[in-house]
Length: 616
Image (cartoon, rainbow, N blue to C red; front, side, top):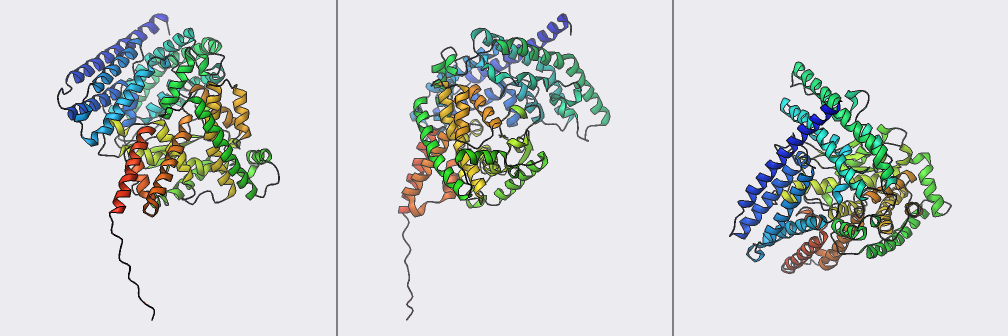
């Protein structure tokens, strides 16, 4: 593409982006001015409405996932103006929330207020750190998000495909904006650790293969619905190929070359967030945000060491049940290398996951009074990202968008995907883990849409890890190898507490973290390496799993002890999940009130009169 043409395309895209930002700002100002002044209850609802609409219009990809209409032809505006506008709007929302008279709110709205205020305050605190200057890692960024968004869009009508084409045509602007942020981060020393960027060029070049029809960006045009006439299908496909050749190919190619020639060579050599400008405070903020606790990194490190010690003893006991002759290291090597524990085809691996999922589904009513209506499926992680992705992940569905939840399993490198981990993984990612919790939250008709889409990591991932312990109640882990696998997964999350804080707070090296992980887990080296690199680019995020699980288990133990024979596991789970995802501090307060109410209710029940019939 000539320099003149390239500049023209970028200018047109920038104008469209600025125009969209101006409309977003005007819509926000109009909604802000219309906030009720007197009635606190009405003002809170209006604030929730405004924030929800603001999120959907400011982050169109999120709108696509949620099934929110009217945003499917746009991308987020990551220009300097767009970022500054969003920050200013968030500050104004926080100010409006602070000025609300809480004493006038009815009891049922107190939780809404707490969540809105806490979320906005956390976001504003985060503005002091330059998170936006590292918009891409090997675990996240437009090279992974864009194809996911495009493939999640409705694909039924000509109008749907016009939206996809509009997004494709505006994509070069997003690529340019992202590259600009990366260049600024490079100049200020704000980049992911260099060692983690090795897969980034391959991820980007996977989007622009030699054969355009094989690009993940054009997957929607591979098989189009029969309701669209063949001649129209051909026309739409040709337009997509034209956009790909003239705009997408050069934009992504430029980014790949920039990353190879400038970004990776200039990226930070140090691995710890503490090596970045103001890194220790930045890490402390990310720890608090991810865990929704006030625990310090040092306290979390000590909790991790204690959990590793406890789980290691349980693993030792299970190992002895297998009759294995040898020490722990030899046993984990046996689990990593013996062919009996591995599938020989990707299809067989997926088939086993689907079988486990269906076996679990039939046992769920014994543990839950309320189950979600939205179904879920099991699919392989896409090829363009499988090599650098973790073992599995969950992508929420949406009834509004007509999309099921998806449990994505990694089928890359089969010798690193042992059978003994599959039951624990399925419980975590699908049912009763992420799909059950997130789908139930989406289906809560009596809570605001803003809360239905909340994804507090400590709650969501804490629930996923807690769900793994429910595998015993679901008829899983019957052989000692699968039981060891469940303990390996629990150990995996305990190790995170140690190595994440170790690297970012206490000066551990990457090699030290890998060695510690390998010494205490049966997970293969490939998985361990991918995990450690994940903690390097998402500091603090991985701490949320174990801390969330420990809080949920603590609440369950308290309920069992205080309610004794009146404890009902189905009611406990329904109460825990009934308000959607919550920060741990608010969850604890809510569940303590529930336990108290259950105790009061049971005390008011008159014991039945027992009749006795004499045998004589």
